[in-house]
Image 1 (cartoon, rainbow, N blue to C red):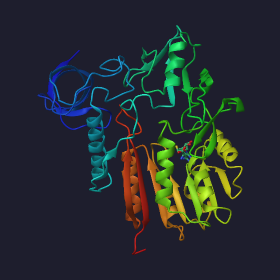
Image 2 (cartoon, helix red, strand yellow):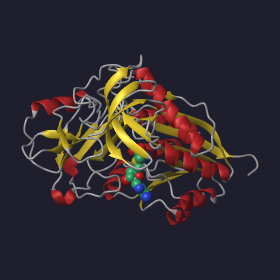
Image 3 (spheres, helix red, strand yellow):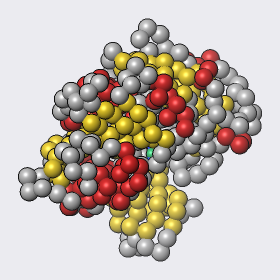
Image 4 (cartoon, protein in one colour):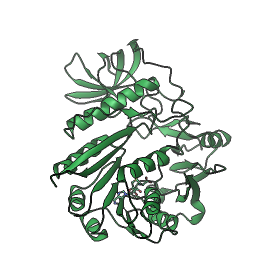
Length: 408
Ligand SMILES: C[S@@+](CC[C@H](N)C(=O)[O-])C[C@H]1O[C@@H](n2cnc3c(N)ncnc32)[C@H](O)[C@@H]1O
C-alpha cells in the first residue's frame, strides 16, 4: 500500500478534500478536513490524480470532532463523509461545495448558504429509511466506500430511533441482497416495517424501479394536516422533516391562487401534488407525472379526494409535458439526481401561460446545469435556498423559484 503526506484544501464532491501531492498529482482525500496535514493511504491511482484516505492526522483542524459513530472512518462504513467534522463546519463545507457547483456549472455567483434543519441530536436520528446489506451469516452491514464489501454495522445512528431499536432488537436477518427498514413519522405512533429483497427484485428500491409489493407494504404518514399512504418501493423524502420543509418551500415559491393549473413533475407518491390540489381548488387542476408504477398507484390513492388532479404514468419528457396541459400556469420539478432532460425544459418553456417554476433537487451539479438552461431561456431566479437534509454526508437539498423575466 502506498502512503503519502498531504496538506488538504477545499472540499470536493465525493466527500473528500483536494490536495496536491509531491508527485504533482491531485489527490482527493477522505476523512480529513481543510488545512489539515495528514498521512494518507492511496485507495485508487491514475496518472494525474488519485484517491486516498487520511489514516493519521499530523496537524488537526479546530473543526475536528470524534465521530459519534464507531463504524465511521477510513476503511469502515462508507455511508457518511463528515462524521469527524463539527456540525457548523459540515454546513460550511456544503455551502462551499454548493457555491462552487453553482459557479462552475451554472455560472451563477450566489451567496447562498446551506441552512441547518433543527434536530435535537446534531443531525443524528433523522432518517426514516435505511438500506443495509445482509451477510451470509445474517448480520446487517453497510458497504465500504466505493466497494461492494459489507462492513458489519448492527446499527446506524442516522436512523430515527424506531429504526435503531429494530436493528438492535433483531440479531439475525434472513439472508437477502438488501434490507430496507422504514419508519415514517405518523400522527400518534411510528410503525416499522422490514422489506426483504430477493435476487430478482434487486432493483426494487431504485428510484426508477417498479415493484409488485402488495397493499400490506403501505405505511401511513402525516405531513401537516394531510395523510399519505406510501409503499416501500415508492420514493419518500428520507429526512423526517423533509416533507414539511419542502412542501412549505414549494407552496411559498408557487404563490398559487384558486383556479391555477399546475404540473407536478416527478411527483412520487403525491406529496406536493396533494397540497397544491388543496390550494388551487376544483376550478384549478394539477397533473402529476411520474414513472414509477408503485408511486403512481400511491399518488392516485392519496389524491382520491381531489378529483381535479390526474397522475400520469409516464417519463417526464418533451412529449409528456406537451400533452399534459397547455394551460399550465405553474410547474414543480423534483427530478432524481440525474436532473431534467434539456428537451423537457424546452417544452416547459414553450407553455405560454407558465409563469412560475419551483425546482427542487438533491444534486447541486445537475441543479446548477438545469437552472442555467432555464435562465438562458429567459427565466429569472427569484430565490434560491439549500437545506442540510442529509447530515453527516456531503449531500444537500436545493430549491429555486423561477419567474419569467420581464423581457419575455
Ligand atoms: C426526488 S423524487 C421526488 C418525488 C416527490 N416530489 C416527493 O417529494 O416525494 C423523484 C421521483 O421521480 C421519479 N422519476 C425518476 N425518473 C423519472 C422520469 N424520467 N420521469 C418521471 N418520473 C421519474 C422517481 O420515481 C421519484 O418518484
